[in-house]
Image (spheres, rainbow, N blue to C red):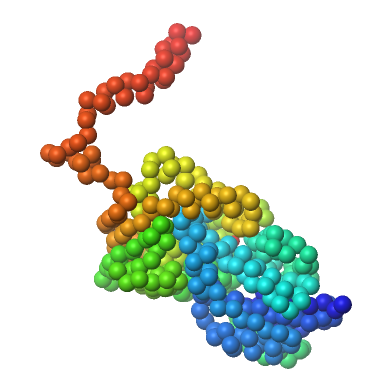
Length: 398
Ligand code: ARG
């Protein structure tokens, strides 16, 4: 039986060149699969036509924007997922979704092999292949950039030799990955970690230092899912999309960091994730109001581990599934409104209200009407400090 190679296709130079190259290498057919995860830019139909023009036997485009928002971004929001306390995992979230659609295409078209354009130095190869190992362990994998040491120059020469209908001059100095949850920029002059990012690097966000009027937004959550902005019911995709524009216009969500990759190297990354950063801040605050103290404390360590698993490519794994169940349970009461001011690069919470609030004015107030019985505190504090008191006494004596 001849090979049928299912290729994760972006429409760019590298994966376009991969189409005739994979056909040549395997003597088989190439099925190009392009997934819309809200990356914007080119029309999917254009991308589909280009895949066919480059020699793909089949070309499939999938509009997965709502699925990406609801099944990948929302869980990340519920986990307040920030790898190394800063990176909202945008690339890490899209890979498992793309894997799902590659596997579906392999089933539909009798695929025997899957191919992706990742190099051997990054996390994304791990995310693709660990996902495939879980969902479709029988499919073979070819990664031309990694396995056959493809370089950009080689790709351009090959494109010209084959007369592929792609614009080889459209060359960005950066490696960019973007989707609904944000945008990642690396390489070029950013590889010198002393170099500051220039405005040119950014696309989702305006310069936060520019003077402008603040924006105020009320975000409504139901069980940890954002369901409305300013009282208008919206799908998760619509919420994220609108907040990307509104928070982006205020310069919210720029991140410049050195990051620990799974393959062992440290890399310089510039991100912009306006909606993700604003939503996570809002969601965390609503959890502060509605989640009981011990559950909240424990959840922080679960959130951290969840983010690491997803960063490390283990979206489809038993521990991730079990943590999802915990997080889903912890979201039961995370319902209500959060008001935020978006301004000067920051998304700051200024108000919260919830029918499931654990905040009690009567217990918290220092004014008249205080329902907190302070006389109980004296005995509580004495017993609370008893073990340390005894231990300290022993230490003085020994
Ligand atoms: N460092 C980030 C991650 O591992 C972003 C990777 C972006 N990918 C890219 N091809 N630029 O999740």
